[in-house]
Length: 274
Image (cartoon, rainbow, N blue to C red; front, side, top):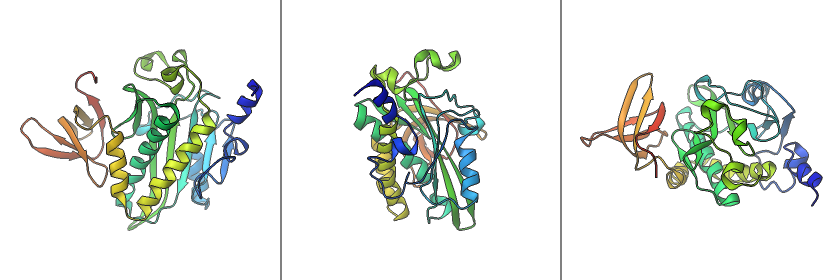
């Protein structure tokens, strides 16, 4: 295969993604942008206009990519994956956090299967490779009492970034699939595998089988069993991360054996992970 053919097969346009896509709904309608402010922002407008479930909004470049708590997400063109899925699950709003857990598990499973890399999940929404951040997930919900109108599942994956492409302030704590394996990855192939894994877990959520998602997340976590500190607007908690509950909250046990569940915050490992 020529270099030109590899480049074509790696395009994250409809033509590059749909061949070989093994899903029934997710990713079957694709809205592509060479450049946009944020795929979540674009998807929000499309969802409000009635875009069907599974619509995939994807861009080669974002000018205003963002992560949790409004943080900037570095989005250089042509090397990574920046996309948002529009989902319309018939579930109560309280069950929506399962979608974030499912996405983290689906992405981690895809990276492990395709590249045999030690990818793992850091609560609440990051995928790490070698304990360095390689991906983040941002889920936004539009709901009314008792019903979810739609969920925007935004995902950013550092696929083919070189170390020099990362801003200096995060260079030592960030990585990419390329850095970890020493070889570029096909972005379209990774996206297809993620969509397949995600649809399988998502179907369990809407069918009321959330334990399938919880078990998948637990098996792929690098958080559980470690001593951590979680900081939020409510303060901070330190202890051993022992489990996640049915709402996606992290269960922390302090030195006295008392357990408490935190539902949001920034997690820090309290010693260098092995």
